[in-house]
Image (tube, rainbow, N blue to C red; front, side, top):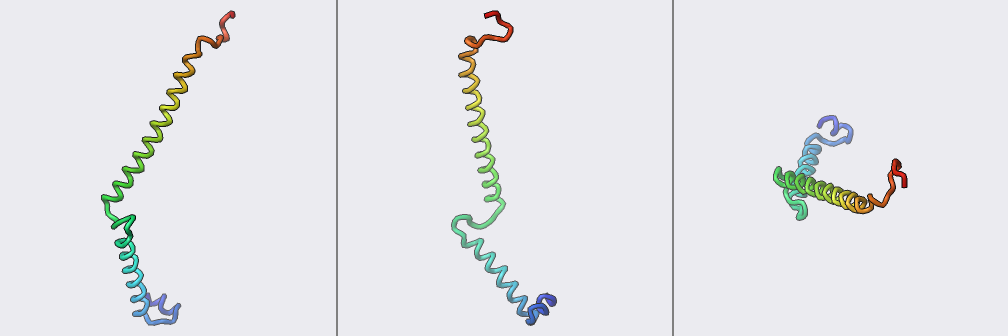
Length: 87
C-alpha cells in the first residue's frame, strides 16, 4: 500500500480507504444484481447443471437427425445397385 501511495503522491491511509470503498462497492453490486442474485455454490451448481442439460439436449437432437437420415437411406438401399451386382 505504501508503494501505491508513493506513486500517487497520497497518504497510505487514503489508499486504504480507496481499497475498502472499492471492495464494498463490489460486494454491494453482487448483492444488488437482480438478475444474477447473490453468488453462492448452489447457483453455480445450478448454472453448471443447466449448461450440461443444454449440451445433452443438443447431442440428442443431433443423434435424432442422424438416425432419421440413416432410416431414410435404408428405405432406398434396395434401389441402389451394388458394385458387385450384375445388373
